[in-house]
Amino acid sequence: MSFSATKFVHPLPLNSSTPSPRSTEKSLSFDPSFKATSSFVGSTHKLRFNAFSKSLSQRRSSSSHIVAVSDVVKEKKLKTNSNLLITKEEGLDLYEDMVLGRSFEDMCAQMYYRGKMFGFVHLYNGQEAVSTGFIRLLKKEDYIVSTYRDHVHALSKGVPARSVMSELYGKATGICRGQGGSMHMFSKEHNLIGGFAFIGEGIPVATGTAFTCKYRREVLKEPGADNVTVAFFGDGTCNNGQFFECLNMAALWKLPIIFVVENNLWAIGMSHLRSTSDPQIWKKGPAFGMPGVHVDGMDVLKVRDVAKEAIERARRGEGPTLVECETYRFRGHSLADPDELRDPAEKAKYATRDPIAALTKYILENKLASEQELKSIDKKIEELLDEAVDFADASPHPERSQLLENVFADPKGFGIGPDGKYRCEDPKFTQGTAHV
Image 1 (cartoon, rainbow, N blue to C red):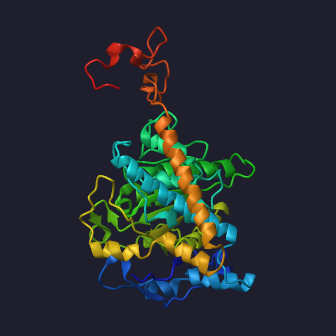
Image 2 (cartoon, rainbow, N blue to C red):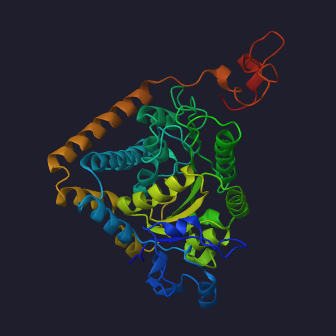
Image 3 (cartoon, rainbow, N blue to C red):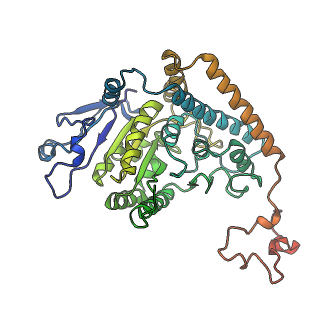
């Protein structure tokens, strides 16, 4: 597959022909005759599209922009006199985070098939460039909202591997004390608002979180309240109503949110090309009045460049951005999926574009670090995951009294009897049901 240049497409100014203040930014340029071809999302034919129709391009002022990652890179070279896109410290951080995510998911597969985990477990292998590219640029105070494929998002946000592993085991030491499991990671400490099992249900929550950030900044005037929200979701979600409604609200209120589409080309077993009338999801951003971006989601450096711009826009109060990261999952939809629907040739093709291998090659070729330094990181992560598994194995299961916690708003309601004790402690409470 050949990827077209990354595009930041900004919407037409509403009810005005006055150039936007952003039209003066020298890093962005617009060519109304721009055309691009891309062998998009696994198709066998070339899709040809105009960024704008002829009549629309005549109406657009210099406030319309398209920016390619290559252009951003050229400008950086002029400013820094360096060919490097990242420093050594940044490169090693990106590498460590991506290898941690991949290795953690591989370990999850082992433990799942050994009967240590139950229920559905959806792995992130192949998509690490998206999580790392965005989340490693965020502050601790920034928020992220995830999906059922949420383990690696949690790790990138700083949640300890042992806490995530214990949660997958259903143990009391897990990030949600064993009550969330694989699809519902949550951490108030790390502003991980949650993994959501149903597609699209996290987007309204993320929009509400972004509204909170804006309210604290503009109404409560809290010092330093420039927090942003990043909402992750898949390509299958983009045909759901919540997606369109929340894009509208976010643009209308200029909320500090980045909508990140992890387009791995498949919604369970449904090809993106078969389910979407226009497979170029990024174009839905300008339709709602926000920039739309398409980026190679298998290249962490390209994702990182796009993420920087989108996050900085949100912090400056310039509103939301829709980013489509074209990526690919290396495993089935879940560990219960035999993955027989996808063409083996397609899977083999994307395996050659492994984002970790690409970053490793960049680091070594540019002498940012030695092979020995990278191996030491691999060893560190191996030991970390061994410790996480040992910790989860040794951790206790939740107490029986925890059964009805976090279910009712009133802690003295249904879950607690007149004597002040949890009703579920009564042996008769679960009589006739499966053992809890």
